Length: 301
Ligand SMILES: Cc1cc2nc3c(=O)[nH]c(=O)nc-3n(C[C@H](O)[C@H](O)[C@H](O)COP(=O)(O)OP(=O)(O)OC[C@H]3O[C@@H](n4cnc5c(N)ncnc54)[C@H](O)[C@@H]3O)c2cc1C
Image 1 (spheres, rainbow, N blue to C red):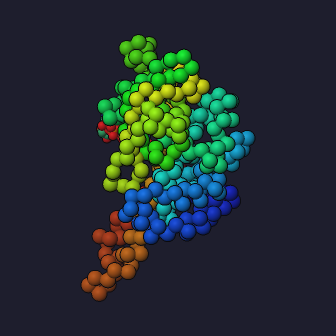
Image 2 (cartoon, rainbow, N blue to C red):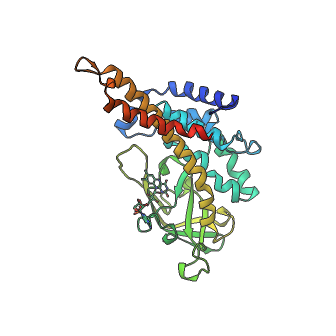
């Protein structure tokens, strides 16, 4: 059985309380007006939840991935949307694992307390999609700078981020020994770059996800913003994906609990043929199936 320790229980309760301040009407209004939930994100940042995976020495709370997963699960179980800011939790993992001491000291404390928003992830491109190794954005070395040219797409939260983690090609695809070499990761400071070689255009999507396309036109990025070794960026990006997938899966579990509760309440409340529709197996079975599928993960915990 799922046996939560006290810290995890306390986190669940605290997130529930925080989310009560952002009821369904708040989220519906954001959806209707296609606006970013700034107030909600600030509230999470101020209470340190978005910096929960950052070690204490850099100002974070140094919690486990499980604790971070519980935070997002509870947000979604309450009907909220952690996807508006979940990347602030995990994008920094690349910097934490592969950045220099100087880079960690420069960025992590600000990310931990929300002064610096690192929640834009520039990997996907229009022509490469899932085939990341085919990406075409280039970073050419020029003295103390790299010059970036190309385009990214589906770059979520770029308009609500100070920094972007960018994957770009530093060696031509045909000149590398290993297919996975030749790509490098950079921290791009978008506060100075927007309008100076960087253009962000919002994309209207079915969900309110603040996603964009981003164009690089001779954008100059200081050499000191290269993370780790040049040419090894693909591995660094892949390293961060486990945390991302686990955290987003936790949001899905929260969503599932929220939808099952809503559907169950409606099944009990809606009367047709003089009885609640929930008396019918056609309504009961899919709900029971969804409940079992959602809660089955507890058996492995
Ligand atoms: C809401 C949203 C937010 C996003 N946010 C970001 C972001 O912040 N940063 C970022 O970099 N990217 C982001 N993405 C991009 C996302 O990671 C890409 O959509 C993804 O990489 C797939 O690329 P694509 O959409 O071009 O699909 P395609 O590559 O065109 O693939 C289309 C379909 O074909 C399948 N497919 C392709 N090749 C194969 C194969 N060899 N075998 C089997 N199936 C295959 C794919 O699985 C997929 O189902 C976001 C996407 C969405 C929808």
